[in-house]
Length: 135
Picture 1 (cartoon, rainbow, N blue to C red):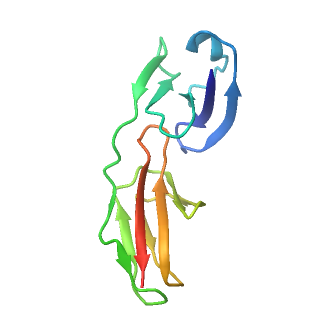
Picture 2 (picture 1 turned 60 degrees about the vertical axis):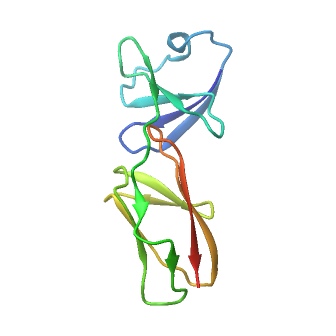
Picture 3 (picture 1 turned 45 degrees about the vertical axis):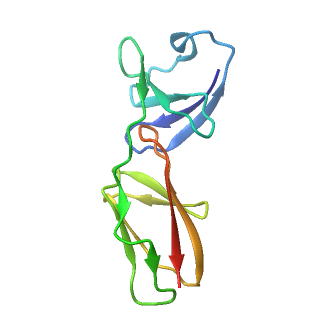
């Protein structure tokens, strides 16, 4: 079993686990009730394990309701677009570069013309991506 450990409060990944364990209970040796566990932590995974439940439970990642107010922004302009209704806290990735968001809203502006890939991939929510154009 392959898994990723994460902090349920901050959403931050705290470790990676590879084990020959046959069950979730066998793999979970932590007493930290603030630790969550992803199973088969590869692109496209849809479930996570809540190790704080007794017994541990397999949960389905919820759909992320966050969306941008626009998908086009003026490059090197004075404006920005906003990605709202994000989980608190969460990590937003712009072309793979992580930014921690603590207030549920991410403002994006671009210095250069181009296409930007923005993603949110949080432990209990399904990964969501956007392509933003700066012109």
